[in-house]
Image (tube, rainbow over all chains, first blue to last red; front, side, top):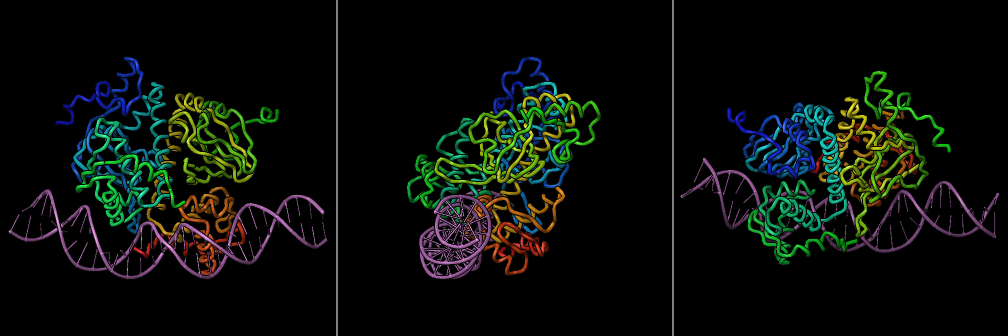
Length: 239
Length: 239
DNA sequence: CGCACGGTTGACCTGTATCAAGCCGGGTGG
DNA sequence: CCACCCGGCTTGATACAGGTCAACCGTGCG
């Protein structure tokens, strides 16, 4: 089977500094290499896991782009996050041993599968890993605080500006352009994430284009004036 | 000093089942007792920590009631959560070794101070504690997912109904009434948490009173028809 | 080629913010 | 003990952002 034949080794993975702790010695690196059970490919539109499925592993995105979303019985839907290379998915599953959201690939993707009991086992021995796991979870908590701040206090323009800046900043950290990006998600998914309707997202994009702040052609976005976006986020002129 | 004289022992704390793992043996319990360095009292209105302060410890609420909130440079303010007895505060500080929000006591309170390096140390030895820490962090992540769902997709009535039901459910788990509660926070703080203005919170309370769903006298709230509240949350009649 | 899905744009409506006035209850000082 | 004050709360009038509904467009895939 293909899966088995792939040599999985965090120690020489080019995403190492994104998902792994730094400053490990040789022995610790070898222990870390045991973390990843195998890799898994998910086609565009495919699901990595669904709400309610039993939780066994965390996933590190190697390539591709995911969204996580929550659906209530009554059909309400909320995108809770978008994940790109080097980011960890599945932390929500730990508390009840089952996933509490859906993770869907927005483009063809590959993830490293890291059985959580193995993570716990190795992090008992490798302090740096233990601390790293705690930091990753804490980071997710802080990120969500930030989203709550957005959702609770910002208006459409501010939301979309903050969203674009965040995306481009994360892409930049991965070696992509600071000013150009391709949206992997629909307007509706952006809207769901930001608490807006897709029409409002579309209109707000159009407004930005009018103002000369960005160029938008379909899902291709070029940021012409990042500072203007930053000003929109900070300004809350409406008090 | 009074602090020193208090015998701090998780093993016979009446909140144990709320903040500690269950099923520990004698030796593990003794290790766990080393977790809490001391207790700390905070007067109503006092701060447990502030954004930017160095992070060293997690705090378990023993008595009293806290809010955590985030303030941006431009004066925007968002309450990110309310914490009551048995709940853990400070998880946001792990990632950058400094707190990233403010924690303020809404009534006179007492917390157990748990140095985080000690938590990490002991959880390397006591598997149950390690797992418990992971669960607590995961629970916080899931809770915030839920808040994002609220903020992103609900309207005032739904938000307030969900808020009241959540509060009363948590209070009930602590042995308080299922139908009566005293709000420890102002309308403005509720509004900030829910992404509403205080006037809207007030109006929505009034509407619930008109409908005979709740009784409100100042901060004293009696829930007359919990099912009606539940229906409001589920119904999203507005599509 | 044509269909379907995602996106844009317009007209209109509604929920919530905003601004403003006044009320209530608890604490303080005369 | 009462008068006053102040913070928190309620209520009303009005404005406006964003939701809703609907028509249409463009592009990429079968």
